[in-house]
Length: 591
Image 1 (tube, helix red, strand yellow):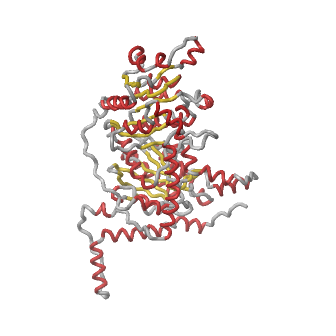
Image 2 (cartoon, helix red, strand yellow):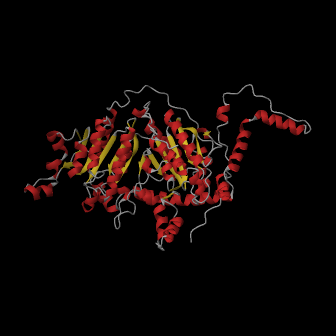
């Protein structure tokens, strides 16, 4: 039976449901800054019969603008709701942490032991040795390949990608894990490698490839070889990025076979480990089958051959550690910061409230409204947020802030999207485009408003304005799914299809066309009932399901959001991106 259409009165109630919260925040905010008002109230209480009147302001202090922007927190950490939310979120976060720890081990113990016996470092140890000591490494898509291929365990899809600092330069690191199926490329391995290259190209990050791979996974050849975004695109991207002045550095630390041989061959500089790295288009068995020639792997494509005879590689290393030292030296010789003036490191204040409280604010029940101002207060510098049009279209929160000193515009859901909130969002996105301010989208959206009144009010064209603005704005965009991401709301809030520089989800997040209950009802209404459909949609909506298929760049604990966004902003706005401005060219806004 189809659900009843809500009455106009119910819609009006929904639309204005957050007004009390706005009023409470306004009251709390006034208490923060009005010392003069406090004095007047005290006088009124001392003399009840005396009427007081606010005098005309003739002077303002310079700190008032900042003071009125601080978000006052109404969170009660002792309340039952907070404790319940915290418990639920900590449970799913612990489950995720355990899964990440298991994935970080790589392949099976037997494969790891064999790898170490050959004198090779494990892939994450290689990355630790490569990046600058004490600096963070933002690993991407760690869940890739999780429970995707039946009967096959492919932790992290057999490849580790992420952003780290090498010799003072932010770089994209792409490292094969040969303990996982010999480092061969599954379809999702290719997708993950290409995603890393796309991030590197858009943000001008030098690429370092730690190569230790058997090439394409042959049983999956139909899904990795011939199409536009398959294996060959890796080498196309290398050539294009090199042409754009984005350095490509390869370190061959194991086999580099067939098409994979083009990775070092198409790099700006290549390093190979002696008696360990091998580069050839065809290995010894295939050479014997094709020509009858019997030759060892070292004689066919070893380090000495390519460093002394063929010239395919530029440097010969004695072991993994030596190779990584040479890679760091190559990055140091890029002269990467040559066109940058010496800039003072931006100053910033940490949020006034503990980011760990986000667990108790949000929880896992996405039917509950998320207090999005409380989320923002635990992400931005000093919990200071200059809200734009706070009284109009209040189901979408927009405003200006800074994160680690970087100016940002924040677009955050505070309910369903109506025409007013869509117009407000499009207006704000255009402002950020004109001012060259990066955008942060905090998604918790069930979609745009539906129904006769909404259609008469132009929800289709007004929602399209928001989608057009998000599509066309040419500033760095970052998206964090803090709750639900459903329907066309995913589009208006800069979902994966709208090219955010990075997109991360929280462990509680769910992504789907609509909720499992609604989807099942729709299918039943058209005579396609399936008793297992609802449970399947629930499973497919989970954060781990989407992250395993690279619908995002990773699942992060809520308390890490500020740091992750800070690294992303440094990636997009630092290095050779400093001072780069692009003019946004807008599509037609239907009026």
